[in-house]
Image 1: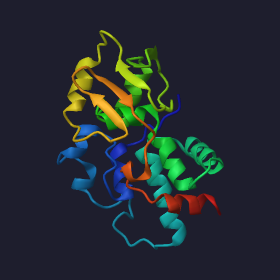
Image 2 (image 1 turned 45 degrees about the horizontal axis):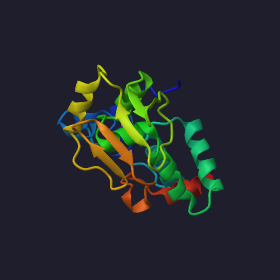
Image 3 (image 1 turned 30 degrees about the vertical axis):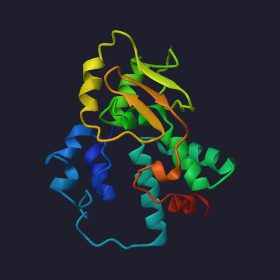
Image 4 (image 1 turned 180 degrees about the vertical axis):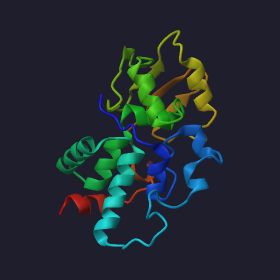
Length: 206
């Protein structure tokens, strides 16, 4: 399974904001953005030429890093979104939001998407009673998510739930039994990803 193994904090610094890639660490003073709020590299503190292309590229990179997907995967999501009826940018965010690893983070069952991928890959989670070990699996309305009985990761998951402030209205979570249900597909107003999807569409439309 291809994955990004580069420094996580540098990615947040490059985008100039917290992308919460390292879970609990992002909420402490050890966060890279808190310690060094400028881009990484030799010229990080210098002035950068602002252009339309640069703004579009940065939005695309921010979204890709936020959901922790590679470039080829992200382009594939965009192509699928462009073929669906409706607004392409909103379709793209809905597809990314429905990824199984992202859903676990939204439910509070994982502190970060990297941790969620590890838990899924090791077979700790079930959807509708069947084991799913594919992080990119797209959940559907009425799917029931539960942790595998007698899972050794239960304590890790319970620790992650303590970091969760709220669960999106399109999901329903029971943190006591570590179960959840997908009530419906998300609306754009319920997706809190800090990106402007229109800039991404403009970039790929060139």
